[in-house]
Image (cartoon, rainbow, N blue to C red):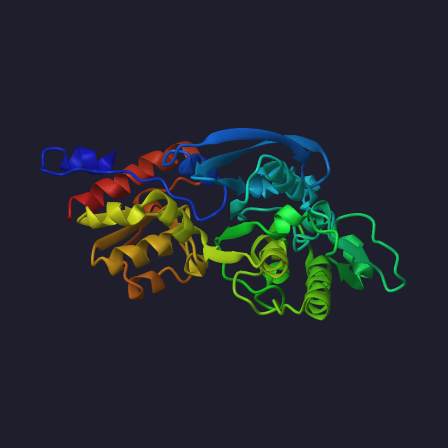
Length: 353
């Protein structure tokens, strides 16, 4: 490591602390901090194919808590390029995963919902958990994708799994987006999930309609709630159907791992990500680290793979220095050189400390 090489002869101790903002890797990080058991469930992926998925369970006195990753079931990275189309993907399998945990006596859930391939606002998940959906004529809807939501007119929660209805849900989100509209789930994130312009507009209308029916039938207004647009709108459904607590993913992980103590015991905090830009300001891990470091009046440096529009706002929010490693060498598309370039950046910066 560059800092160890450059400062190795100094009276310096370097501690590495893994973090997640609620997407992939949440379970891997959490399991290093608490006694736990890993379970495997066979569930449906975003396209309805059976997959085996791991999740973590830990016990505190009489209460069992499960840590789940939505991306482990319906992650965008699990699909081939030609399979990516959020009009055809569903969260049904994630509902199956929740049921598996409930069958094991779990009553508390910590769920990371970043990195999904879906934009069904948890419609499929809700179906798996017993929520019934009907069209204008009283016919129960079939199918679990956004296409199935086009005819939605009524929601019936009388058959919702009672264990799920009474469970406690903490949802770790890495974005602050609203349910629909210009800054909503569909318009901001659906394009990277494979949606073209027409599909984006259609998905946004579907979610808007869903939000209005939720307000009519459940009395919950989620349309402008921060973080309700996370995971293609699944954040909003967790809020409306389960009174879930939507938290910044990085803050939830920090609470579990006791990250504040690590900060307190440090003189300098170094963080980073693949690319730092304006999206970092929407609750990403780097921003969470900066906020906590400044809360404890610690110096914090950001070293990321590259910098994009908006990165400079991190300086105003407390970062002492923000550096793109690509300014120390061009990796192009050769990721084997990325480690070398990152090392050069860190080695150079460590010399100025």
